[in-house]
Length: 257
Image (tube, rainbow, N blue to C red; front, top):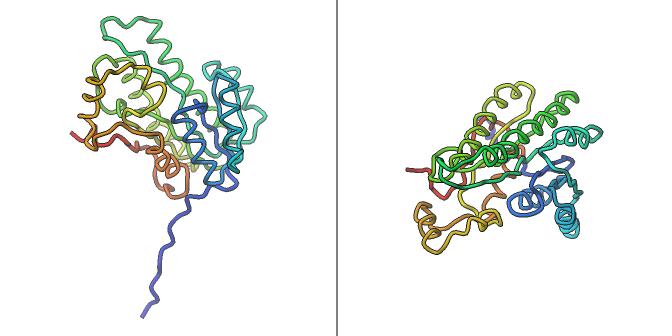
């Protein structure tokens, strides 16, 4: 009788890997940086506000993680290329920086449209390009994770520009997965539901509005940043070695119907 082969679970550890996380001073970005650092990665936290992102990196170091900080406007493509030009390649990119300017479709102006697309799409596109280019030059594999949204899969009232930007990110992710997959670079998205962050709180939802949101979420509550940490770690690690070109929707069932 042949001996029974017992498979070994792929590792979720990231020891020896370098990770870059944008929008990392707070919220989902900070949670992403924390979970990757806790798994052994050296993390670079990136945000526009120097004091905030440096404090976040220091907090991760205080718990034993390896972390440094960059304070650069990610929409300045030339500065992004310069900042990363001499850096070692990043094995993992969590492209999280984003914004939203809700409002009725008929009232959306060019300034709002351009601001959302400049950050959510244009900046994400060219940052992924810089990271992928260095990986390709060094012949290294990697994982690019775009933080998308459940609104990259469904529509919503008063969110036309944001929805369009997130559908663009979902499409970009699939295109990059096809193009970079043969080189061992995986590209996926994490698509959260409404999550308790400063950005979400800035929408000013009253009790009635929050109740309406929670009624759409089948698990009955909005998300916490901790709800996304496992999904991000999964996509960053060898546990998702055959996963590319897809979206891990963490929405409590919002898009199930």
